[in-house]
Length: 295
Image (cartoon, rainbow, N blue to C red; front, side, top):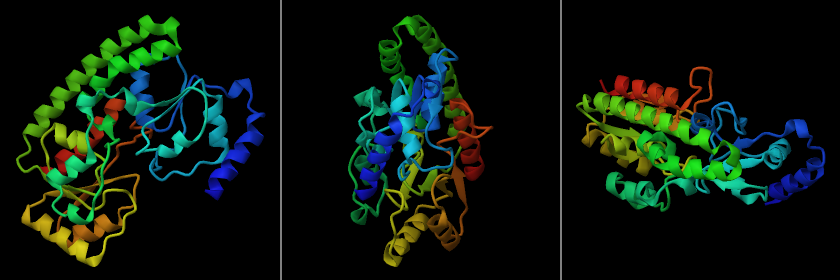
């Protein structure tokens, strides 16, 4: 709490120093949001990203310069209170929670996913919305109309361009969905284990069997008893691979993988590097790793 007030104080002090040259049209917290918006706005609107590519949005700690960027943007977009919820605590103009544009029919509940897949959930209880919606192209497809309406409200003179670009984006999403469907259908054993529920939308869309999770929230500590139960679960279900999030520590994942004699693989749901510089490069990159892991 003390750190929060320190940030607020710094924000008030530095806010008066914000210059017109620092202003951007849209500021987003993480790269996937920029990449999705890029497909709709193209080069007509400047979009900046607040967090570095290697950072976990769940646990990121703001610095005063971040607050200046948030205030100076014409539009500030964060994901969800369960993803980068720290962003929701600051009173900045035109702040938008991106998950609000996800239709109810496409929203995934973490508790439902856990009780469906995770046999050790009796000691890992968690309820609420799964905020990693961008990992499934079909889910993103379902958001596009709402995103276009939102952008058109803030930038009405560019509405026609948004609509045209959105149509092209939809076509690309349909195409990559077909490619992923074709490739994942060729995988015989889809029993997987995950470090935490960070890629559930993708895994559920393409009918993988998520046997369980090491942790529901990043940073959870497992007791030896819990780890033993998880090891048994992995072996009994003939899990082929364990997937972990590149932005999180993989120490516990390594221990589990070595203990049960299977490999673990890093997926990158955030991107932002030179190679992963658009929405589709992230999907293709992770698809290739999943294919390699389960071949």
